[in-house]
Image 1: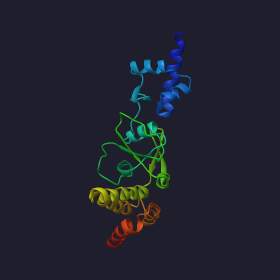
Image 2: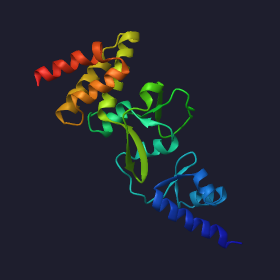
Image 3: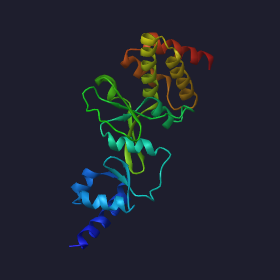
Length: 215
């Protein structure tokens, strides 16, 4: 009877070596009990990254480790705003939390750690401009540079309209300038997403034209 937990332990380690990190529900699907996982955690055989999410203690951590954890915890979410900008190396700012977008009707989970800031995107903006990147063996959905810039402009527009704070638009403009200079986004890509978001004519176009004239 004592051999069964050992076999489950070995299988759990093997699975984590292949997948990077796993949720408790995934272990259960593989026939590994919660009691086995609890014992492994108590013995230090695995680390609990967040409630119900585990990784081997000797796993190599990527610089974008927190994005992989967030993607694993919120399966229907997409990395956005400052976190996407930082991933694409278009800002020197270090986001204090992971920004993640969910759809208008998606379940909004409560997560204690890591720090995740969840925002809701409308149905027309949520599914556009997503690209998947592999981080620590996890497929992480992240908005492209062009889509991220337009999202920042839209957020900046709301900040200015409701709180009379212009810094959001200035930040988006700088990100757009850097993305074009570093060839991580083209003016046509930005124009496309801005038009779809309804902010091309008054918000993005005049700023983009100024950048191209001064280039």
